[in-house]
Image (tube, rainbow, N blue to C red; front, side):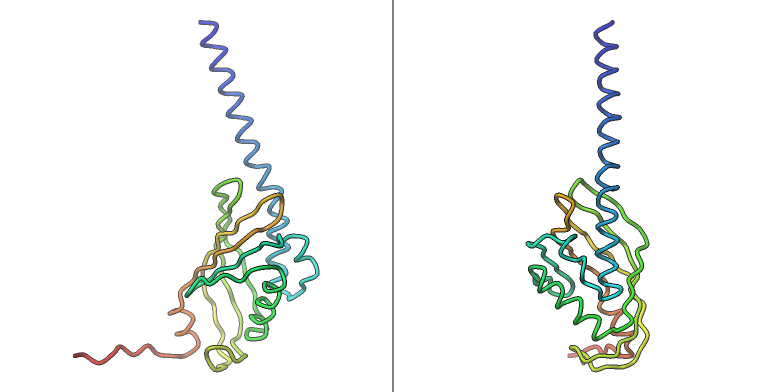
Length: 166
């Protein structure tokens, strides 16, 4: 009986220890995430190399082709901000799914003013989406971004025309 009680007590202690460890990585990575989002929202990239690993890889809809490295990430952020100068990403929820990944839901707002794949429209856009952000040793190592291209295109004022019936 004593052995069973001791084993049970050890399991409870281990469980408490592991649950505290989960909070620990959330506490460590949240400031890193805040600086990363700040870089996107302001275009101030001075802290980016402090929070993003040199092997960082960004992937997004529609093709998920990788953007690799800090310099390419900086170029991508500034390119996005040139097309949408008032780009603002508001985080709505964070869900840590492991000790190396977090899902962040967000809403992106801005005015589409620049030339990109689509001509500038001056349209206000508000698009919900989510990112899966990976981290290791208190640095971000990657992000997968997903949102609805249809929502984006419709808010820019374009119409989707189905192909003619055969």
